[in-house]
Image (cartoon, rainbow, N blue to C red):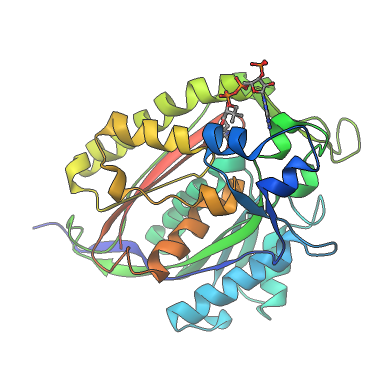
Length: 327
Ligand code: UT7
């Protein structure tokens, strides 16, 4: 018998997207590109773009409210707020403290976590460690971004790829027998390697240019590393949990590029019908992409209680990670 212990279980999920949709046809009017190129190379057909004055903390708060409603909880039930973002409203304070205030909460702790596109996986792993330690009871884990603000809208190699949005889950510390069939976060695996900074970065910041800067990416180089890195970290989760690809009900990867998603699934032997894809609708929303995809696939009835769900991401830094969750 496994000893009784605590697991972080998913109680609710929610999301928020800006109203404005920018199609590939509209991108054709902005830069020298075609719908055909974007769809073939990335799978993206449209992205949501925040309105003037619509900020990351606003999207994060809306996603948090939706996740609380889905969980049947109120904001006062939460004592840990983590927002994964690279596009905060301000250099400081943290978006998480603004979300905490917008929800009317004055207890607990709120902070941001910055691991670019891997941010949500890093935030789930961080919240899990707080909850399992017994220090906190319920966490709002949010991925929220307004990447449209970081883009050079004259650079066709980057501006067609990204979108804005937010997603959130509520994690709750729950007594568990630790069995593979019992709900909650089963394994998290995080990695980073700072030598790759120049392949994906923003060319501004408070301590260098004193400006926000624009996103720069050597797309082909990032692509080359992505599949190997994410499959390695997923295999580490498999080994840690004692499962194989055949045990996975849903694979919810970071939504950067359809080709990366398909190549990763193929390499792991995960059938395409078990892969959640939203990159066509949302583009790459960085730290928001996984919780947005979770919200879509829970709402449409694909992810159900008891399903084994693998999330993974890779992004700037490089950072990469995966988490295995029994829903
Ligand atoms: O979320 C964080 C992690 N980020 C990623 O995972 C992104 C990883 N990288 C990628 O997804 C892909 O590398 C891209 C989608 C960015 C690019 O696809 P690619 O197949 O690697 O294309 P490429 O960069 O090799 O470019 C091929 C051609 C180039 O023309 P030449 O040099 O072959 O004449 C580009 O100039 O496509 C051209 N190109 C475009 N053409 C039309 C680049 N961007 C565009 C565009 N429209 N928007």
